[in-house]
Length: 147
Image (cartoon, rainbow, N blue to C red):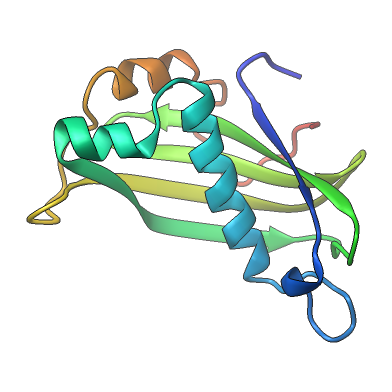
């Protein structure tokens, strides 16, 4: 385990599942988004400040998801977020765990865009520096780390 991984515990609610009580595949994307938002907030760098102070925000450019096991109604899962690279874009590995069992993992690329023109732009400081300082993984494809 590393010190820079962010963890967010989430309960699987009825609204997250299909008729069989299994978490719907798109639910994992919502959980990952929530975990990314909370990881920035926990760093003292909320999205709202980036928009208000610098006129920009981050958007998902690419996401690849690998599903291994289903989450089910009332399960408690943990979304672990690790930064792989922070430069012109932000590369993340996000994993969804139920205890010691990895349920899914997401390889995510975020881009920073101008709030008005939506043109790509560099991440502002202190976001870029703080994210670079928390980079923990080499640039690889979908990973297999413990929670």
